[in-house]
Image 1 (cartoon, rainbow, N blue to C red):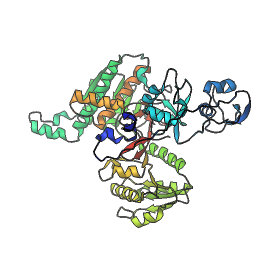
Image 2: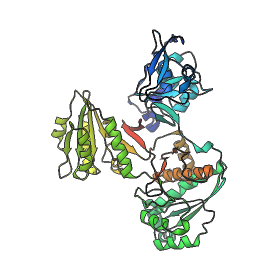
Image 3: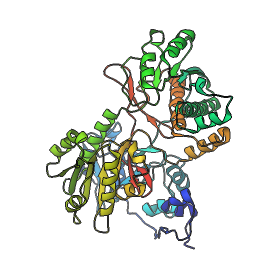
Image 4: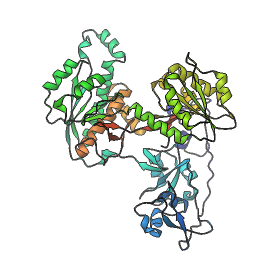
Length: 533
């Protein structure tokens, strides 16, 4: 009816993929105006001297002046190795020196050889209609290698964003593997002895609840999925699974009975006290040991890898992000409880003009007070510091009620915990107030995730749990790193990404390694999107 593709309709209405097309559902239908753009390319004869500013890059200057990066480098051969702040370079002059305005709220993509609009749209997850709308000069032509395309923020495909440019994420799946046979040991607290297999009814009740049995089983299934995938790549992996029974004496016994020679890595135990006990044993001091689920900080032995980001460090990263993101010309409110008072005070010292609100002792804030502090004339930015479910439900509901045609509200928090997954906190409310936070995982609905769910359902008869996704990602990363370089940490591997998790291991001061991979996320309507760091 509207002469646009089904993909474009889904692109502007992502709820269709989640719940289907429903009667009376309101849809956004984009209206595209196509017009042929004839560019007056600048004569590469007359030049002006340009002083390189902070954050300026070759691709950005090439885009603004309608050049290819290679053209810019021909004019300035000294920048082949990169730009330096304060460096003098030559840029074309003329009536229309600046061909394109650089927009900070957009992302950009550098076209590779043999890529056309169809290939690019599939890689980035944007329809060709939208791609042409934002890059009208390619209405009737295809982009060439090194051309820079403008891309709306919400479309990233499987890319990272660095200074506005989309970069393909590192994938070890396509690497050359130097080690094609690996052995892993995994310690899981199945507690098999507690299951009465003679009683089907009791067994079903036990396995229907979230407990060590089900978590261990789901984790094991995820590991098996990773093993199958790596087998298909030609990396044969044997995983020895040990039931710890959540008993230190059993763990001690297993350490003595296992032949550790030839074991490439150990995953687990899952429970922190068991992990601490296990990791101190001298027999395994030279084998990489990965803590797969716990956020609790572990002792810094040289062979230990904390695969979950440490909350204290992640919180510090998010605090720095918030400090840089807050617009001091707009309205700012800081809301805290007594437990997080020191954190909130740190923000208050930086943003001295911010309104400061401490919650009542009974765990709520007064609605009339919040209403009086939010304004229509400015953007309202709210920093909320609390891990109390009741207070979080109270604050998010109040802020949502303040959002209207003339009142814009954005919520930040330096620490997002599982309280925001509780049914008492509306996801719609979080979307309306654009809740912005940092997380160490991002459960986005990608093609990779869809394929994993389908294979998991076919193999195990049920959908994967969060432990299954986590186990798949951790195991995949361990196997691929070992196959690629015979070790887990290397400064050659900056960061790896899988279905939900990313891994960026850096050395700890006291020894061992921690994962510094993270996502900056934001709720938008019912969706969650990744935003620029």
